[in-house]
Every structure is written in C-alpha cells, then in structure tokens.
Image (tube, helix red, strand yellow):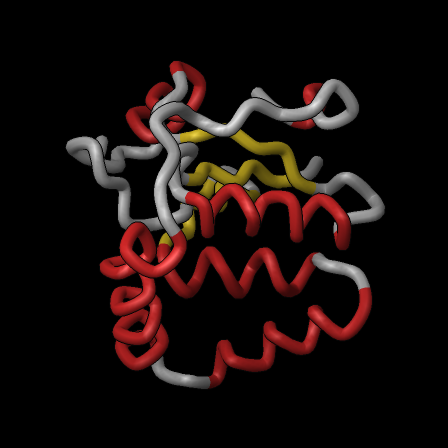
Amino acid sequence: MGAIILFDGVCNLCSASVRFIVERDRDAFFKFASIQSDAGKRLMTEHGLALPEGDPTSIVVIEDGRAHQRSSGALRIARRLNGIWKLGWGFVIVPRFIRDAVYDVIAKHRYRWFGKQDTCMVPTPELRARFL
C-alpha cells in the first residue's frame, strides 16, 4: 500500500530530506506531496490537520489511514528505509515529548540554518511519478 509524506516544499532541509529518503527507499514505499500543493492541502484537510499559515513546522506521514506528525512521522520514515537507517526506529522508546522537543527546535530554526526557496521543490522527471 505505501505511505505518503507531506513536507514543506520551500524548506531546503525538507527538500534534501525527500531526496535522502528517495535514495534509501528502494521499494518506493513512499509517495510525496508538498504541504503547499493542492494534494497536500487536501490530505491535510482529510486528516483533520490544520493548514499552516505559510510556515509548516511538521512533516506528516500518512500510513494505514492515519496521520503521524513531528518525531513520530520521522521515525515511521526511518523504519521503512533500507540499510542502517532502520535503526532510527529504535528512538521510538524515547518519550514523545522529548523527541518532539528536539524536532521542534530543528523545525523552528530550519530556514535560518538550511535556507528556504521562493517556490516549492520541483521533482526531476525520474521522481515525478512518486509525487502527488
């Protein structure tokens, strides 16, 4: 069935993360949509999530009909990647309030630390089929 990752399409860190995931998702388990896209907005609404005002602070992983945000979403991604990255799932034992606090610090500073684009990431022709 697979899962969908909604990400901030103008964030350099988020776009680099998508490329990182694609390279380590040999089975093409994940599909992608930016939160700013029509598909992203529709999926956010369908799952009862607030649409961010110009600054989405969380990735969202939609898997098995449920939406997972922040560190829980990131860990669900790690669990499906090939290689050593699967071990990231082990951080699920860390209490969520601690994981989310670390996630929130990175999310809050990501534009300053990694930069931001004026427009959403445009997938390469090879990746286009994996984007909604």
